[in-house]
Image 1 (cartoon, helix red, strand yellow):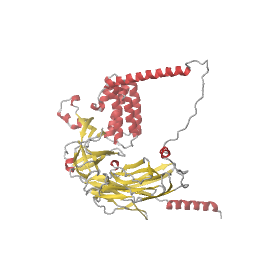
Image 2 (cartoon, helix red, strand yellow; image 1 turned 90 degrees about the horizontal axis):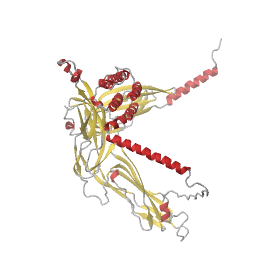
Image 3 (spheres, rainbow, N blue to C red; image 1 turned 45 degrees about the vertical axis):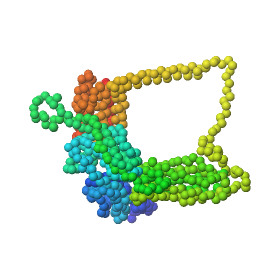
Image 4 (tube, rainbow, N blue to C red; image 1 turned 180 degrees about the vertical axis):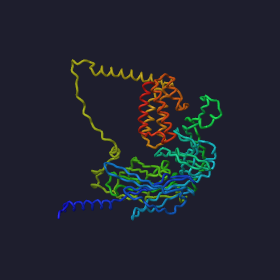
Length: 597
């Protein structure tokens, strides 16, 4: 009988298979759940998404009953596979769309997920559903194509209680760009703009039977500083929108048939829009107020103590006071310690770590004092107290550190200073940088050396050249300031390159990418030829180049580029060109236009 194979090889193969099997069994998948918003309006929709990495099986989700929301659609499933350095990884995702039904704090609880026979639980997710009594007025002008509305999280607050305002865009037409110069005036508030991690995302919504695309342009956190009826002024935003343009001036046939909207084109125009003003009722904090209340509103924790409770006389010891929690951090001050006689105290070192989370300021503030006890014995420091108004309990709460004890020992009998002690002046210098003594440079000049050397003349030569260059630069700046057209031409290339860089950062399917490339070329041509590009249709740019006597090849290349880009923007899939190919074509055309404009 002929033996095939080797027992050693067979055993090695079995070991390898067992190792691979054990690795696949012990590898734990990574499961994460998220929602696409933390604050929504009643009747608005949002998406809950589950992602699983490192599993070949599609997860099975068992949704419980979730209060204040209703399931709108789902599940939607997708799979994504990637190869990195020859290693394959997979990601499975499943999503559900819900609609908010009732105002208030809402929670998506830990949801049960099955991967095969294994069971997992997601983390619970908290968010807020806002009821706006003014929602009808917020979109009452449904005959408008574009409008802005300010939507507050609440219309009645206490002094020091935060409220958030979302400035939301409602549009029926294309919006390509927006600009908010400054926050609206709000007398009686201090405000902070909440940064958005991504560009505003358009969401389709049906409001009072009218379909809108909506996006939150900006969210601002306001803290009232006094009581009464306070007003937040409208937000002003400059929007670049799509408007219809009649082609009647270019028609060659006076026929009513050609008045059909099908034969009308569209162009972009920049317009200013204002949101609605907001009236906020601010209530005074209740009386009587504690004597040590300094205006803190929120929920806080106080911690205070010494870095050591036993020290020699004249030695330094640190006293730290730390306040953490959430509330109007930027308006409050930490309490100061009251010390008995015989202890020197120095100016504190302060630090803070504050961020915005769940539409409120959270974090901590800390003060560290340097104390130097001069007399030995047992020392008691009065409790450090902090009083704040708790919004959930609607009452004043005082936090206390309790008595702080310190034992001070006498070192070497009656000697006034110990080896580890510091005087007041020495302690004050501890936080300063070390000052080094630099030895003098003992260089002498020869008696027969010339009075002015080569360095002197080089310094004056290059100095004069620098002054001349500054004068030329200043003359150019003044020339550009006085001539808007010249300044626009000079900045045309840098503006076009800026648009290109913005486009390169966008994803393949971003709706803004092709709009940015169109602005890059049209803006460059308009600036170089000193025309308002927003008033021109796509076909008119090539005619403009021909009118200025530019070569027929560049005119044809420009026409083909702009027409193809417009078709790809408004009829996706009609032009089989990827984002990378469009960006490369834009760079090549911009290089060609630079040579002739």
